[in-house]
Image (cartoon, rainbow, N blue to C red; front, side, top):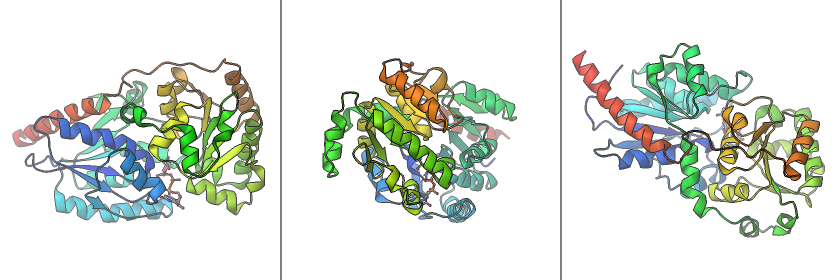
Length: 388
Ligand code: UD1
């Protein structure tokens, strides 16, 4: 492996899509706070590019303006991944980074990890070892392959290490550091916006929030739920039944919005019971979630955030790569099963929802642990290379 020649080579930090931003923000802050810190360089691949999906979150999270923007935009998985790789390679050539830090499981994560690994630049993966064991999910393929080429792997839950070791990754490469997403959440909770204010600011009456049982928050974007006409119809019908019992606020991902229009499913949504909103800012989403009676979602991040907040979560997926949220947290997998969803909802509305507890090291200090370990590791690698 090409270890850095000196500590002026930057640590190159990559973000691409919405769920990356809240993971990278605390890492950048923690790296900057380390004594004798290394320079960092922030690269945004542009996988998510809308103001709603990107700029606003940068602002909410206090992320600095990217040093490098690759502006890849949307495409098929192959096109998007290839385009990130093509545009990322010259960035490595220009900056000779000490290492490349990637987070999560999006196409940009794998694309940049692959480019770095082939250039023999150390790859650092934050949120390693999560497995849904479902290769129908593009993210699962990204996870497995990114971990295979990573040199230093930071995990969010203890079970992740066993997944990695089973795949032949030496345990010495793995460090259990906790959950950086929860660092962001804890740092931002005090700034979270009030639900009624959020709706008013978007020109929507907040009357729906005054229901005696409160309200539920919905997000959906997994291809398995929203890209297929029958699946999307079934999910929307279940949500309509949920909304008859509890009003819902539905923050629509662009993919989901366009499919609802394309399949002409607007009529499945009763606007008096289910409020459709554009993708929300980070502080808005935190505000909406932290006051909700329940969150219904197929997102990975929301499963973790609800566990940390102690808010019941119904996950509209058959599996999860984050089992600790089910074992210890407030998460229940209901899949696309109407009965299971309504039953779990009834339990929550009767006060029998899961209470859960906060998993180990989801304490708001994961990023400082990662920064301290990473700098030590880089120094060791450098000494090792010189000695070798
Ligand atoms: C991606 C990630 C997923 C993550 C999700 C969060 C992969 C494989 N998937 O899925 O893990 O949970 O982001 O949002 O990397 N679009 C816009 N504006 C944008 C971005 C996307 O309108 O700023 C639309 C485009 O039409 C695009 C579609 O959304 O085709 C999907 O975007 P894409 O980044 O390909 O995947 P996501 O479904 O967002």
